[in-house]
Amino acid sequence: MKKLASLLGLLLLTSFSIHAQDISDHALGLRLGDSDGFGAEISYQKRVGQFNRLEIDLGWRDSRQYDAFKLAGIYQWVDVIDGGFNWYYGFGGGLGNVDFEPVLGTGGTFTPDGGLFVFAAGNVGVEYDFDIPLLISLDIRPELGLIGYDDFSDSFDFDIALGLRYQF
Image 1 (cartoon, one colour):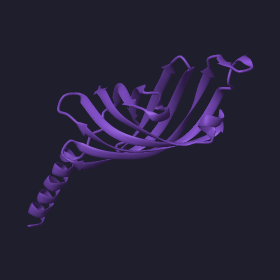
Image 2: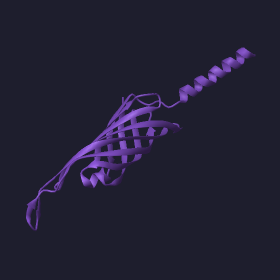
Image 3: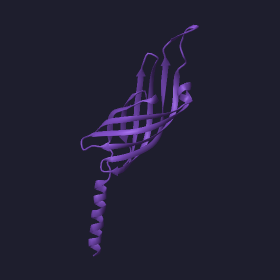
């Protein structure tokens, strides 16, 4: 009877480990959003543990008013909801730089101040892991400017984005 119970327990534990979520080693794609996320970001995820990963995003914008880039790094914990659905949360931060184009004003042409900025960020989202190597996600990343350029260091922004990543 003890052998049967042990065998049944081992079988049960094996079935749980088979159905546990599996974070891919690497995922590369786009994170499409707005706010101060600069619209589109190249996004890379690297697994660092069984339930943890690191996400690195590079966003940039080249417009008539300014040129800017932003680099963000987020450490995430991933938990299973059901089937291929997961939810994740994390924290991190990043830095960026903004350079403004000259502006014609009443006193002539002047260039607004820009420069380097540093921010802290949180991250909460949901994702679906398809049977093919595609991961789609929707997340919110509240960002708090810490130091640097005033519009970014004195602000609190919500960066909401849709992510599409190829897993390998």
